[in-house]
Image (cartoon, rainbow, N blue to C red; front, top):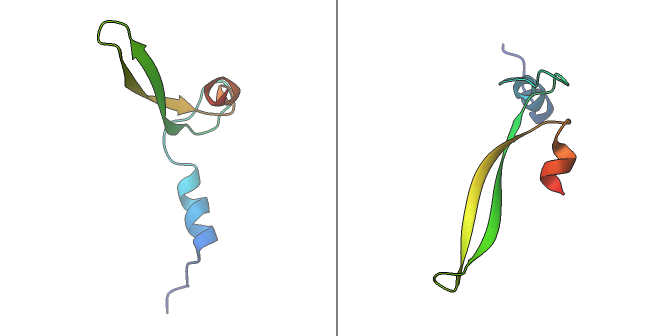
Length: 64
C-alpha cells in the first residue's frame, strides 16, 4: 500500500520549487501589486497592476 500523504508534506514538497534569489537563496514568490493612480486628463482613478518577485531581501520594500 502507498503511504498516506498529509497537507504538511504537500507544502514541504512544493516549497523549494521555482527560481531562487542569487543574494539570499530563497525561492521567489510572485505577488500582484495594485496601485491606484489619479488621471489628470480624464479626471478619474485608474489601477496599475504589476507582478513582482518577492523574497526575504526585498520583502520590506514591496510590502511597505
